[in-house]
Image (cartoon, rainbow, N blue to C red):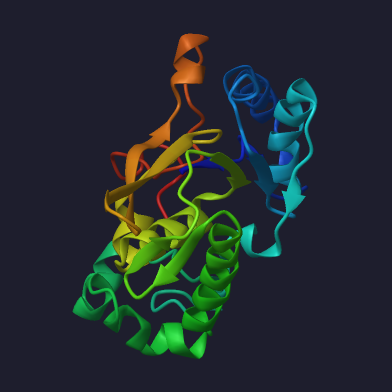
Length: 241
C-alpha cells in the first residue's frame, strides 16, 4: 500500500480557502496526481483542502470521500507564553523542549497543558478514523505493527493539512507527534509518500519515502509558498511566532 498525504495549497485562513497563489499550486499538483493510479481519494472537510483537491478530482474524473478526522488538528491550549488560546502543537521551542516527556511515544500525553486541552483524546479520535480506513483497505492495527489481511499495492490519496499529517505519521511510526510537528516542514501542496513494508508475511510497518515533496512546483519554476515555516533569522519577515 502507498499513502499520499497531500497538504492544501497556500491558504487564505480567514476565508478557509486558497489564495491566488494556492490555486496555481493546486493546478500544478493536479498535473502530477491526476494521471496516477489512485485507488481512492479522501479529503478534509475544510475548504482549503477541498479547494486543493478539486482540480485533481476534476482532471481525473473522480470524487473524494470527506473524512471529518482529516480536518486540521487544532485543539486549543493555554500555551505557556500566551494569554490567548493557541493551536495545541504551536509552541515556542524553548518551552516544549523543557519538558522531556514530549520526546517519548507515550509520555507526551502526560503534559498537563495537553491534558487540560483534551489533546490526547483528539489524537486518539483521529487515529481511530485512520485505522478504520486502513482496515477497510486490508491493514489492521495489531499492537505496534499492522497485520496485512489483504496485502495490496493500492495508492490512497489524502488531501489534508500539516498538523494532522504529523499525527498520522506519528501513529504509523509509534513516536511522539511533537518532534514531527516541530522538526518537519511540508510546504503548501507538498506530497508525503508513505509505503507499507511487509518483510515477513502479514507483519507490516510503514515508512516515509518522501516528506513534503514539491517537485511539481520546482518543475514549473515556482518557488514554494512560505506558509510552512518560520523565519531563518529573527526579525527577517513576520513569521517569527
